[in-house]
Picture (cartoon, helix red, strand yellow):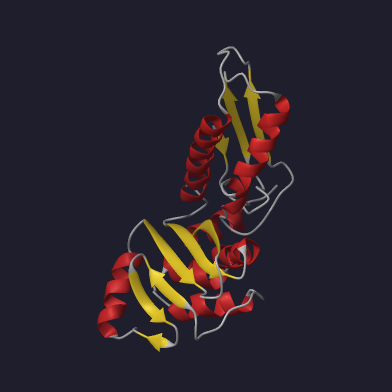
Length: 222
């Protein structure tokens, strides 16, 4: 189980997660696998870009099954943590959309991660999502502002399978805008950015930002 609503950002933030197992796995191996899986699940999820002090993922085993397979255990843990991370984003304060930012073709995986998280944290991108505005320019400018290696002549941007910008060529006419707006009307979709530089890739997860988020946090008093 996991708890989270706002102040959710890579580094986990205001989040508490507890996972139990009966796998006969050592504490050392559990920690190694947990560290690895966290990078692409909870640390890839962002609601509002803000962090707090009490973020925790706790993995506990009583080892009573007497059996353990590292690969199977890692796959199962990733499936569980990926589901919980996405559910937290889906249930973010005021969130109406769950968006996957699929960045590929980066110089390396680290640069792909930086770009993906820049997109998931961008206020301009988040508000465009809430307004269901397929503003690919906000996507492109956020990629460029990330500080990572990129170029408009190699960049490709898609909403789900709908390509709106391809290596300098803009496909965004009135008909394309209509189709892209339909995609953005969905509760769940993917924005893909192929940087066309090398083979680095990363997926980050975020949501929109709208009136309800502002209301919740404007009314909140300690």
